[in-house]
Amino acid sequence: MILTKIIDGILYGLTWLFAGITIMVLVFIMLHILVNGIPYLSPTLFEVRFTLDNVSMFPAIISTIAVVVLTLTFAVPLGIFTGIYLVEYVKRGSKIVILIRSAAELLAGIPSIVYGLFGLLFFVMFMGMGFSLLAGSLTLSIMILPMVIRTTEEALKSVPDGYREGAFALGAGKLRAVFKIVLPAAMPGIFAGVILAIGRIVGESAALIFTAGTIAQIPESLSHSVRTLTVHMWVLSGEGLHLNEAYATAVVLLLIVLFINTVSAILAKKIARG
Image (cartoon, rainbow, N blue to C red; front, side):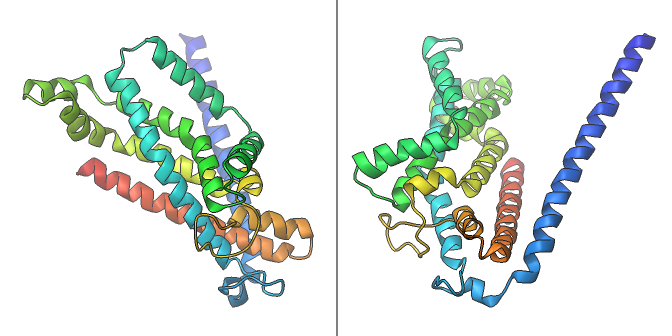
């Protein structure tokens, strides 16, 4: 008993220690970005057109939003429906479930640069899309698909079987029970996966350099080359002439991520209450 209490105390202390270290690292990174970036935020950084004089990030902001929306449009429905199929319609432990999960885990472990090379060879060259918003979004869709599938699976598994049994007892069919009862109850967990996916999309640069390009312009069509905020930061810091503007871009990127996460969390809570 005494040894067990000692071990529990040590583990409890380690938990608080590592949690505190994580929070301290997060606070340090945020303060570093804000202190070095806020002083260099200026109206010229938000001009509509990018030039070498103003190095405006406005086209990159629009391009980032476009990439996020388009990527989620491709990946989220496919990922959610795949998760529903694996949990609700296929027998647990079947070979197809094992195959799809193994493929998803394999895709999740592939470095982003490999996705970029694949997108370059397949979407940009073989499919003839060129460096474009569409090629970049399709590449990122493949990248985040395993995350959406796994989070959807876990969210659906967390829904008690009593929900399903109650729906069937009231005469609801399989499809109605899944989409009217089970799926709404699992939406907070699914939203959490979507938030993580958005974070990876916004923070991605390697895959987009090879597929979407680096041209700083507001996209007028899916075939136009774009430059997202992370790629914009990479270009500015790589040149070595606009490090201050790169920090200012990081501030805007940080605020956008915080805004998206906050809005998504609020929506998840409303859906859970409704």
